[in-house]
Amino acid sequence: MVQRAEYTLLKPLTGESARDESDDPLNDRHLQQPRKMGKAIDNKVTQQRFEGPESSTTGPLRSPGDADVQEISPTTATTRTLSRISTTSNVTYKVYKRRFYGLVVLVLLNIVVSWDWIAFAPVSSTSAQYFNTSEANINWVSTAFLFAFCIATPPTFYVLHKHGPRAAIVITAILLLIGNWIKYGATRATNFPGVMVGQLIIGFAQPFVLSTATSYSNLWFSPAGRTTATALASLSNPFGAALGQLISPFWANKPSDIPNMILYISIISSAACLPAFFVPARPPTPPSAGSVPDHMDRASLRKDMHILSKSLEFYLLFIPFIVYVGFFNAFSSLLNQILEPYGFSETDAGIAGAVLIVVGLVCSAISSPIIDRYKFYLVFIKASIPVLGVFYLILIWAPQTHSIAYVDLVCAVLGAASFGLVPVALEFMVEIHYPLGPELASTLCWSGGQLLGGIFIVVMNALKDGKDADPPLGMKRALIFQAILALAVVPLPLCLGLFGRAERVRRLRWEADRNSVGTVDTVGDGAYRDDQPVDIEPTAPARGV
Image (cartoon, rainbow, N blue to C red; front, top):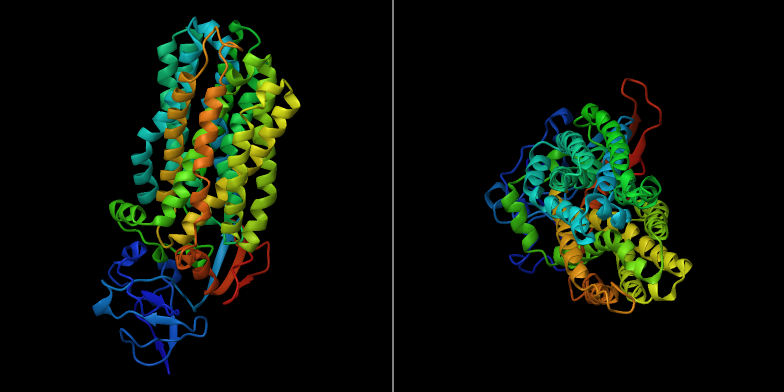
């Protein structure tokens, strides 16, 4: 007997299916009115067919693609929940060439917003002379930027949740255009408060573009390309910081060069903003079952926040993520001041900062496609975290060697572990909390990282030695503080999936894609099709990018 199910609320039957799941925090995410199925794919609803007896709250309805599926009747839809969504309709999913246009725009915006953030940090001494102020005040230019990120986080939640990635991208471009030219005008007039105003406006722009990566990749890319797309969009942000670390010392050799340096950065930023206004809003057809809007829980932000607040797995990822992002921001901002007391020049510090980021980007470019293919998110996370903790400890003694090669080596390892971890952690959070939208966890993680980055800059600057110390103004105590916290959070992600919680780290979005029977086509903007269809098999994730 073949029966068409009228609802999408499904529950897998496992060996522990008889246990009471009322304490599962992820159950709340499916407490919605059932959705009727059978509409066309243009209405963004998929069909499901099942074989088995009449539906009931206990009797399973079995499908060819998912033998262990239980249907939830309308009368119990508000009390029972969905762990996996299974579709067995023969649906054609498509990926479009235009997705790369939006990805390139995201990359460019992340590069320039990060370059804007760190512009003064590699030349902190020269900038302090130009504005006739202290290096501590120059540090506040970077710190205020990070705090501005946190202020703009609630609007970012709303825009991504209600209007999608395109709206966030356009808002970013507008704020960058305004902020850059205010900062340039104030720099030319040696008006330091005006520089802070421009920097704050640019800081308001960053969460809109940095938090968009997971939402954009989920909306436009198939399962085989999501981690790579997220990596490109997310890691282009520190790449912008690398450009700033490397180029700023060459553009500002003396105090009078500072206005021209900001002018060049403002011109580059403006050029990167213009394509943002032409990014398409959404693909005509979703790239996979996991991207179908009707499969995503689009409940209120308050409800989503409630779900995440009860997820232990979220905290086990969130806490180390924000600590390591915070230390990356603080270390990048203070690198020049960490190395200068030991005889390193601003150029040496800039090169070390560039090594930190470029090596990390290269390693991420290698690891992301591999993880896209094999989906071993958790193994990679558990392998990378201890490396970060150990090398933040080694960093304490790196400046004292007076060897730029040793400093560069430590920075290279830190960059490789950090940058490979960022997109994997973000995508893994989306996977285990599916079908929640990807924007909430991503924005919370980035916002927490920026907040801690600002706090760490203030604390580490306060731990700087006095002028009568040996060496004067050294920051060894700040590096010790950094190492202690970096090591303290190492055990948290290592506990993921342990102590009987393996079910809580299942890749739910990947399972939804795996259980779909359909095809993924790569199509151009017109009728031209540049690839053969790629099947999504019932037992394997999609292979199309």
